[in-house]
Image (tube, rainbow, N blue to C red; front, top):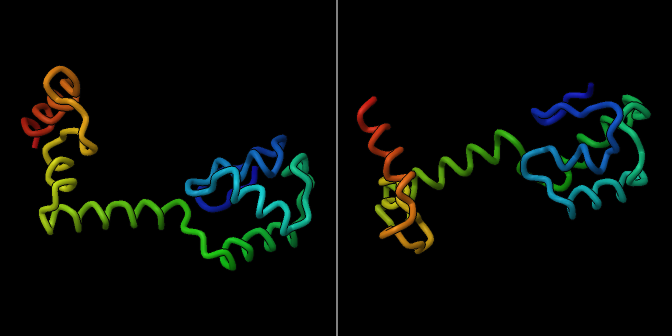
Length: 122
């Protein structure tokens, strides 16, 4: 098993599929990374050398991709900022209600129940 960017890459999978497991990397970025390294989509993780692994890390730094913990931190910071400035999205998120204009009369009852449970235990 190869461990990069806080995710484990299984040895029998291809690089293209394994890169999709990293939080913040989609199909486009996975294809882009494979092309820049000169790998085919079917190139297996078990065939990688240490030099090639270092190249993968350098490409991530070069492309300035925010992945894994950096992306999670960014999401939490934006949510805290929205709550701090009391924007609509932040307040709805704080109350546990739908943020993007969904109906609440008949739907989203489970989120309301979960909010009540969370308030009881805190």
